[in-house]
Amino acid sequence: FRAAMELGDYALQAGTGSLDGSEALALLYDAVSQYCEAYSLHPKNPDAKAGLDRALAAFGAQLQGAIPAVRADARAGLTSLLERHPALAQHAPLADLIRDLS
Image: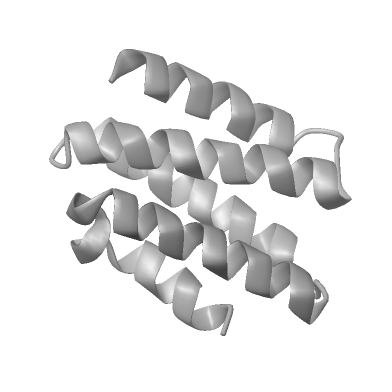
């Protein structure tokens, strides 16, 4: 749990720093993935939920105005995370972002 949170924190900080474009998207997706892992291990942990929510918001913001192919790839990646981590089925911000990327 702690390792996933630390990796998520690092990726989120790097992805929201001075990078943009595909580099930022890759790091932010990694942050989402790490926080998904932490959340699935401890879904009631407020830090895991908050980290996942921050990463999803940053990832979604970075995707604003992205070309349809990039949005489709992001949607596929998020859907894959949802399938790997059933505990995320009740996490509304993830479902909302997947829907918004359609």
